[in-house]
Image (tube, rainbow, N blue to C red; front, side):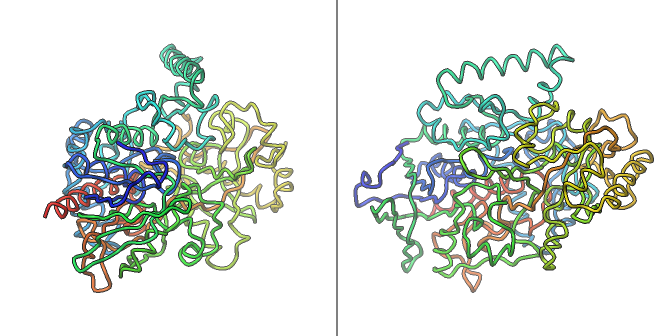
Length: 578
């Protein structure tokens, strides 16, 4: 693989079989499939890193029916998965697209694993998010990328987008959920002590020669495996810090693109097709305002390259967005904190705190308004109802509140479990602490009586194990992100009894676009007459989500990104050869 750091080094004329715009998970996957097929590939990335939001994520890849699924859930079938999606998504997306995804998924996973360094393993238990719907399952559909030794990348290691710093420990050591459990239990278990010691010593050696740890897990591992695999193909070129400013369409479809970098421009011929994988519109101010309303861009924890520029070029060729069905993005509650370098950390509250016993969420009146154990997408959607109604003061920001026991055991947002090192978080206002619920209410500007009533209700619900207000902890998904070791009646419910008490502010953060360009089963972008634009494809968040804005399961952006990247690349390579 050739890495093009200066566009001036790209001699003219140049011709490629396939050009991929965007080097996130979907773009890397499409480029890799095209390379495996023997195509000459140009991968164009707007930023200085590869990986996009995939590199910041858990890397979970939701693809039912794979050979991995059979290892942990042999009774699950594609018919079951189709039934689940029909129930969850219904008419919000074309059934033909969902069928193509399900039918191609197992083939795409087997293909890429057999011909590259990309390797997965199934989660032991990772339920579909709407686990009370028929067709859902508790395990087998969510795949996890295998950890990867970043040292194998050599100089290319520096190209991997680093994880969110607040998700690392000890100055850049990546940890997944398994590591966290071992680190928290290292004084209670010999196995946990040995595991923890091994990864800590590895990290210490890494820091002697690297700016961060090279033991890569989750999304960083997936991106590294994709990049390492691409590097083994000499007909692949990667252009960083490069924008696509024009797409030329001839009589038979797309035939060329124009690249721009620091005043330099190059026109590149395209034989097979251009695959858009730029990550969506979330960092485009105008599109963001139109699509997401009053949701501030600083609340977005996604990668910075999602400018919507590629989508705008496609729309200039006649492309259009798919229909919105209530939301144009996928969501998570986030807490915000200024970093030392002046940037804002938007920390997604996925599974580690809000669903645990001893936690509750209230609005600015002091009332609970949401099931704290629902999926992060539904949680943040509920927060936005006040924004949509013009009453931003009601639920944004909301307050995630816990007692001292819960903080020690689970942490709170960017505050690590253990209960130590609170000083900086208290000093900058990220964390609020008080010796009583009334004092906490006063510091947050909440009605003390109403907050006391919310805390009292949670205590009563924890004793009975039933939350009649929001049904917290009733589904398999919710119980899975609770605390299985909790001695109470409900793994998601526990009283707040031990002072001091703590709170962080929550905001609805968009983690990726669900609305994208309308496309067919081969990811070919459609025009206003619903006909394919020859040689133009969209995958990842540039493609309209087959989930129709419903967050059905973990990894429902990365999974379809891989599958439709596979289909698009195969189609584009065949087009180049014809």
